Length: 132
Image 1 (cartoon, rainbow, N blue to C red):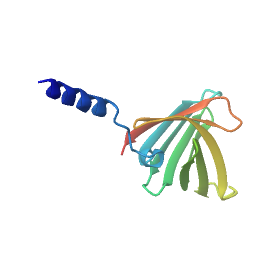
Image 2 (cartoon, one colour):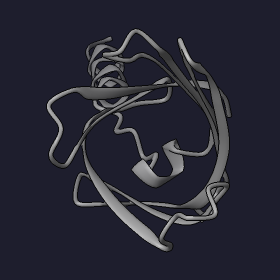
Image 3 (cartoon, rainbow, N blue to C red):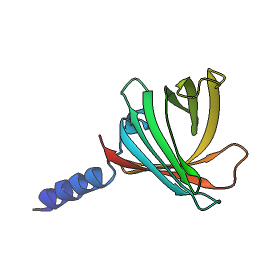
C-alpha cells in the first residue's frame, strides 16, 4: 500500500511539472486579428495568416472620417530572444521601400494572444488568435 501511494504521488508530481514543449515560433501559426481604435477616432483592423515556415500575409483596413484605406502586405515573422522580427517583402502601396524590417518586444505569447511593444512606441499591440 505504501508503494502505491508513493507511485501515485510520483505520477502526480510528473504530470504537474510537465513542460510545454511548443516553441514560440510554432505558436505563431494560424490566423491573428488586430483591432485598434486609433487616436484620431478611426478604426484599424488587420487579419494576419502565418504559415508554419513563418511567412505571413496580411489584409488591413483603416477607417477614418475621410474614408477607408485598405491594403495588403506579405513577409516573414521570426522570433529571436523574445523579439518578434517582421521582414515585410510585399506591400500594396507601390511607394513602400522594401524589404522593411521592424522589431517588437514580445510581452506575452500563448495559444490565444500575442502582445508586443514596437520599438519607439509606448502602446502595446494585442493580436488575438482566430484559428490555427
